[in-house]
Length: 129
Image (cartoon, rainbow, N blue to C red; front, side):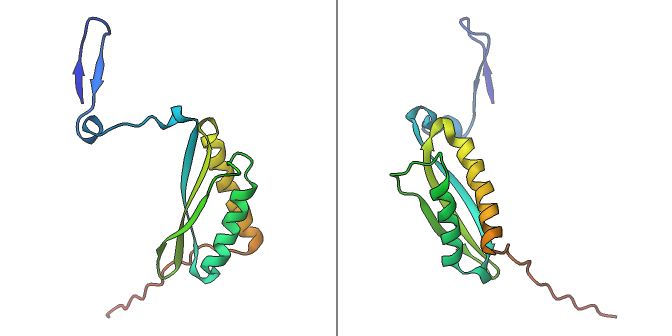
């Protein structure tokens, strides 16, 4: 971090690295913003069942845009888990409300629909005596 003093203002901070050389887009000033979230559930539940539960929550969230495409996409498969990227559109001033509403809603919906969390990986340990 480089500190510079100028007459018009006591101090400016100029970041080093990618932040100072990359373009910065002010997404908060555009009015409409996308909320990106990642959720995981146990693979024993099935991708279609998980997607259906997540979609119900996204559709019921009062702060998401009704006319916009919301994404519920499988992004990673492991032995015990299915990961979903969930992307919804809202107003920039509703970003955090949407984020927390969807998280709470998914927690409740998974419990209602019997969607289980990923099972921990089993580890076999052999001890030599």
